Image (cartoon, rainbow, N blue to C red; front, side):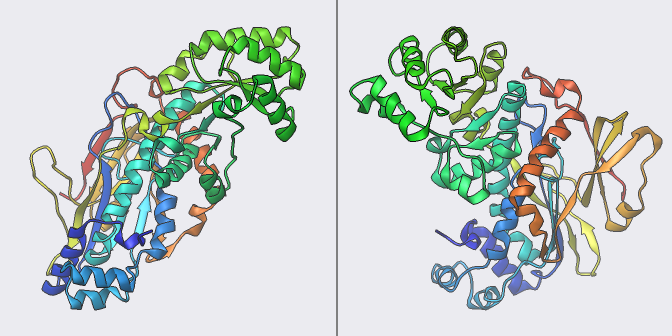
Length: 443
């Protein structure tokens, strides 16, 4: 597997090479990550991926082989190769905490350091955030639609093998309870699920033989897959084999609402009143919402989770907003491109509240001194600073990479949603849940 320092685009190294030659590489800079707009119909996004970025960061240094490759391909000069031999990120990263809701123009990550060290991180940061935030945002919509019923990740076979691990982690941030992916469960100490597929039933001479085998191996608390042939016959057989203490059944095809209703009635009639019903089969937030009145106990979600439920990226960008000039002072910089304008100066993100309910996102643009002096007027009500410090002059807050931090992010996600207007949870088309105001205080 490539080193993190090679998970990047070529032009980041060519820019580094040119900047080292012309003397601008060590200019202090501030880069920010944001999205210009939420995906169509989405009312909020969920920040995810910061912990993964922090995991990569200590290893973001090209190896001898990497440097030799870059020189051989004429990507960098030998002078830059020597500079890279001692590379280590010494800058500062501030970010929205994982699990936090974000909106258009929210500066969810701010990277401050020299141009040389900040520019190399662009592709890695964007690839992590665009994917993880897309999955976490989809997961949030699904778990909100589930209304407290557990959602589990089953998307490993629907995406790249390594993306599957990242997706499982991001799904936890968005409220999921566990994963079928063993690598993700091992990496992040997640609850893992899984019993048997249709192939296991088909392997045996009868469905009864398959159920007997599974129960002998896993106990009566296991979940039996009941839709290989006839669901009604399978449930009868399952209870005959396991008894009324059968843990659960899974339905993976057909009209899930009506089939779950019939299954519940049948299980109860057979005395298996505590046997749970799990449904799978190309679920998304809309399908889950449609099952709200059905007697379903949990959901297994695959394709739609790992593809962001139709929005596989958050269209996030990484833009230079402030840099040191030849005079040694910091200056705002901004693009003026049609449709791609940016706002200069570093940002301070504040969320305003009234009676504990979020009213809006206030994004201040200004110099470090002006931001430090600015105080909100009464019209903004109570305000909360959205950015936390994840890396302080190269010192990584490793507490943000732990399993405890991951589950804390899930808790934070629920709290963040509760603070938003109730319309934020609507699955219908609409504007973002709260407005964003961008205010330049250093003009």
